Image (cartoon, rainbow, N blue to C red):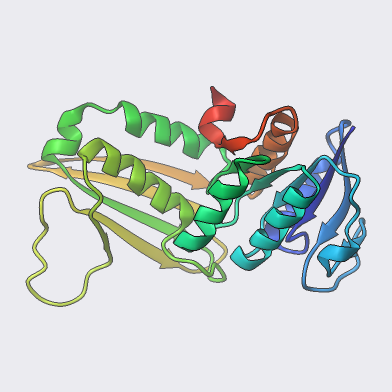
Length: 248
C-alpha cells in the first residue's frame, strides 16, 4: 500500500485526486495539507507540524509558497514528492532542483498523457516548420486561474525554443512597430468560464498554417497522471523526474 499526503487538498485538483484515488487498491491517502479549513473524507491539517511522518510520497497541487514548505517537509522525512504547481519564480525552481539531489522529485506543469504526446510531437516535427514558420501559442483557462501564461504553455514554448535554437518569448502584444522578428514565439492567455485547459500551437507560413491543439475536458486526466507518477516515483532514487521519464 502506498501512503500519500496531498498538499492543496481542498483545491480543485486536490479533491479530484481524493476522488480518483478510491479506484486504486494500492493507494491510501492518509492526510491532506491546506491553509483553508473544510471537513472532507480524510484528515486535513493546516500546519506542516501536524502531518504524519509515516508516508511514502507527497502529491502537491498548491501554491508556490506551499510547495516549498512541502518540498522541505519531504526532504526532512527523506520521502518523494510529486508536484504540478505552476507560477514558480526562478528561485523556487532552483530550490526544486537543489532538493532533487537528495530525494526523488517529480515535477511537471501538466500531467496529462495527451499534452505530453503533444510535446513529443513538437520534438519530432521537421526543422522547416521551425525555420520558415511563425509560431504562436494560445492557452485558455477558467476565470480563477492565477498564473499567466500557464505552466503548460511555458513548457510548450521552451520545447519549441530548443528546436529554434533561441528563447525569444513575446507575452501578448500592445503598441506600435511590433513587427514579428524571426524566431519570436508568441504566448497569449485567455481567461473565462470554467475551461479546464486548452492549448493551441499555431505554425503560420506563407499561404498555409498548421495547428496543434490539446483540450482537457476534465481534471481527472491530471489526477490520473499525478497518481501514476506517485506510484512510479516511490521506487526511484533521488533525482529530478518528469513525464518524459515516466512515459519512456
